[in-house]
Image (cartoon, rainbow, N blue to C red):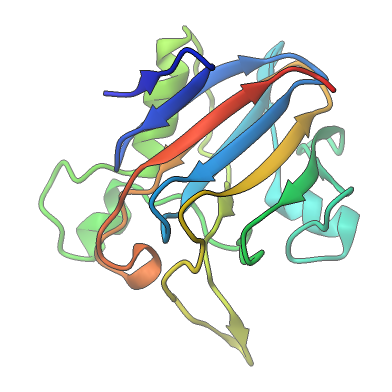
Length: 203
């Protein structure tokens, strides 16, 4: 079960998720506590969960596979929702791969009921009394999926213990983080671990 410290840090055990309401101007830091762990990050407009951070629209807006510091992530209505402030990790992140879901694990031969980022997303929203009509493609922080020619490679994350990526909310929004449960391909080194999320005041 997730825990929240006196400083406002929420620690997500391996394979779990957490949703939080975030006011415009607040900062959101995702911290890899143990190293080598992928996090699926989703964001929705606070007043309409039908509007969500869109990886595809963000790539079109930035002409990059992943924004650089100072660039914005935009929604499927092309409105800025988050901006990337800083990144202390080696900077390997992904916006090509969809969230893992029950069908993905079934295809990989996992037992029924394997946790998934899609499941963590919708459970987190439900805890806030919200629903989303779709599972958006997430921002996969710390996920290393290099493009080599026409092929994608699934490599272990190279984030180190304590590495963090920090965003600022550009509108009132709901942010959901999933400590990715994937243990059947190499992205988490075969052993999912914890993440933390810090909600920080505007600076």
